[in-house]
Length: 227
Image 1 (tube, rainbow, N blue to C red):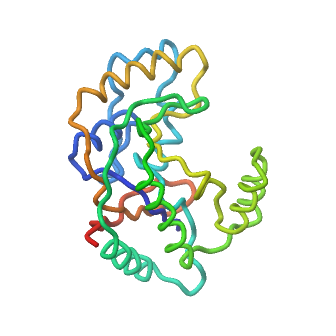
Image 2 (cartoon, rainbow, N blue to C red; image 1 turned 60 degrees about the vertical axis):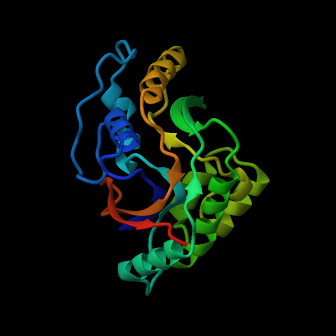
């Protein structure tokens, strides 16, 4: 069993429906969703390219997936999430846009978003007491990726390299794409996104749960930020 602390738009919100339809999976209902029509992907197997995002559900990471520390129960984590959310205010959500990040596409803020960075940093610290140490296999897998000295240090201390200064708020929409497909797909998805009414606040955190490593994450609980 693994858990994660994510930002996920409210079920039924335009942003939730958009992101879930792009990746083909609704992490609230657990249902597969049909592919979006008219995406400029040519002969690319879009279901294959979105397999990894479907595993995690549509989200922005605040505390990445972790197993619970020995002696810690799911109820303890949920109680901790409720206390955390009760003490934190909602934060302004800058306008997002679809961008190419490396080889994949994602929604990212169109301007600096220090409040989002601060929230992610607070989640990193506050939920770390619930986290079991990385297994040797998970650590080895991470270390196969080229990382800076600071990222390697963060991996050892926090179980994830992309925290604090290394954090970048994003909501993944694809897996790795062939280079010629990246910009056409980015533009097509950005046009669809810009037709939506944008979210103006990040006003809740969500606890996601994965039953086993082969399974998909589902929304377990949402907690409004009411501090």
